[in-house]
Amino acid sequence: MPAAQPTARSRVRRIPKRGRHDRETIDAILDESLVSHVGFAVDGQPFVIPMLHARLGDRVYLHGSTASRLVRTLAAGVPACLTTTLVDGLVLARSAMHHSMNYRSVVVLGDAVLVEGPDERAAALEAFTEKLIPGRWAEIRTPSAQELKATRVLAMELHEATAKVRSGGPVDDEEDYALDTWAGVVPLALRAGPPVPDERLADGIAPSPAVAGWAAERGL
Amino acid sequence: MPAAQPTARSRVRRIPKRGRHDRETIDAILDESLVSHVGFAVDGQPFVIPMLHARLGDRVYLHGSTASRLVRTLAAGVPACLTTTLVDGLVLARSAMHHSMNYRSVVVLGDAVLVEGPDERAAALEAFTEKLIPGRWAEIRTPSAQELKATRVLAMELHEATAKVRSGGPVDDEEDYALDTWAGVVPLALRAGPPVPDERLADGIAPSPAVAGWAAERGL
Image 1 (cartoon, rainbow over the protein chains, first blue to last red):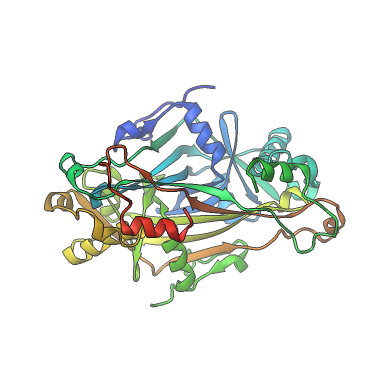
Image 2 (tube, chains in turn cyan, red):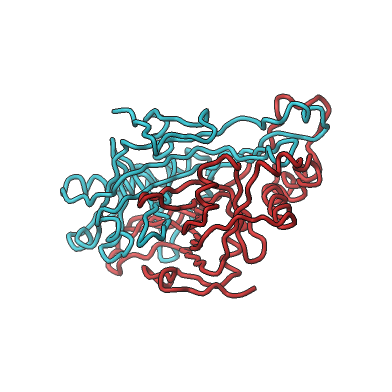
């Protein structure tokens, strides 16, 4: 696993102590987060679109319909930026200006390339489903030839990737610690609720092992 | 409250039934979500950076340090795109390709402008704190003249804003409903845990009314 190299444009400049360039941190954030915000510019106007992503090794994958303008634009090889953010908490300081958020984010710079090899395409599509619920792929109807034809898979390399992490309590100005204002953190996390069966689910079909196991692990 | 006008570049083209152009939907998403992903391009390379946002009326505000390259770049009046996404659930279909996410997103196109009027700046800064925990502003030390000087507030108009919403269960191909695969939705939401006091909090300082009330409303 090669280290991501901070470049002049990917190095964390503002509050550099929050910057992380190790792939372990970058990969963990990409693997936990479900949605990326993918940016590209058309005639100077940037667009930022939410997309699912999945990582395998040194590449982060996106996918979409062959008919999608977004996918066609990205597949043409324009410079792109993929950013994802996990929100971990509200940081409540003694002063307004030191209020903040705890978060973990990753920014990946580079071109998205169209993945054409059938094995890599298949592995990426499996990764998208497995990421939602591990073991799900084995329980469902896998893509038909027609569905594969209608889907494009894109990849961005993780060469130019940076993570940024804020954690811990508020950092107030020294004189403000004398105030009798409550300060601390409210932790936040994306949590699941109990699975809701599809209204067209036939009677007697219980949650599949992957779904039931995933829910049980979370006490749902 | 003027309706946001879909333009050629902001109209939802892919799966148009998911598009929403009414300000009620757009405002509700902006007000619930904490973090935006803000895109801008420098020499053709897009950058997408997570930022807190707060909405007041027809404007969505961003803020940052006067020293921030990001804030300086945006304040120079480059075309920008602010996107925020709320993740509502995993959509588990009977086939791989109909797996999806439930989500609510907003895309705002336009230039970010530097807010210079002191009243609007003050209102925006209060809105950032109040958004985290309503009532918090009255409990904390408000910004000093020096802090105000070191902070820039930016605004984007909501004229060219679009929401996109997917909700409900999976939509499978008709023949796949005969499969005995469990299908449904796993709801997801950003949830708070009990407030954690700052380690430097003096003994005997209980959570403030705003924090305690907010936590109580959520059963924390």
